[in-house]
Image 1 (cartoon, rainbow over the protein chains, first blue to last red):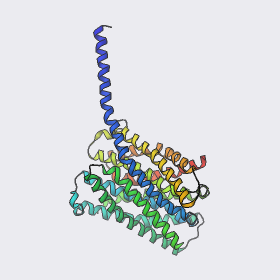
Image 2: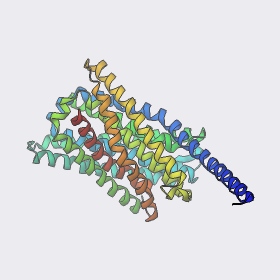
Image 3: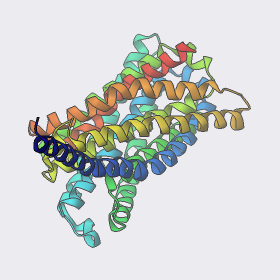
Image 4: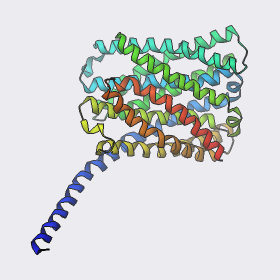
Length: 213
Length: 178
């Protein structure tokens, strides 16, 4: 192999390494950015959710004894969390696509549509989830009691509608704040909205169990 | 109200809460394990929320990138895809460790019970659930977008459905390992 050929291969290798280094720079930066932007809010929101968990732990034996409640618990928690992530991610996408101005978001027809749609889905889902939870509990041997069923239905409906209202407020305020300060609301809003949903649903359920059961 | 949006959201929600009910039914059949480890109910909402937040944030980032025509988001092996997957996994492990510590302290302070096993259960369950959940989230978001759906409407509910079942099973496995 000629001296020239070896020198050319050495240069080529050097160039390859430089390209690799250039490609690596944004990779490290973005991974770190996602971690840095998300870790604090995730830890904060996990602590918030755990506070809700303390409420549930304190009525653990009541939950285990009222079987439809135990079956309903993850589903209701999910449902409210889902609305948190739907509202937060839809709001962020609208913000990025400039569907409204930051100063008059409440006038946006798309925001009105989102509000009505989420509220309707929340109410119907609450009815479905309560019926299904009670049916499974009944199959597992829990006695059917119409008053208890209606009580559970009211609890699910009221908790869902109340928490959807709270989630809209959190998403709009948090999203506008993050966007204004140059952060990606996707990294902040979903953990924040789901933590508020978790804490709210756990505290509402724990309170109701203490009061009525 | 757009009927199509309502239909998309409600269908996804029905699937999601049915998954939640499946997770609740798993709990109803494992009441002995729930009573075994004190503080598990403190860990559970935070654990489910953490897993949901990480997966939903991952889906939302990929979705926002796709809506903004950032086509490199479509490939798992692209730098953008890898960065997101790595960050999500790292967040899950660090977050669960903190969550385990918080649940341990909460049990100790609120109920005067010493249960260090909660820390192990949190990290082990996070490892098991996220090794399955993070790739599923990434690939599903891209699949939905490519097939003309809006991942923003579907991914949140969808990922919590699978996530709940996987997380509850992971928690029960972690408790069984102890």
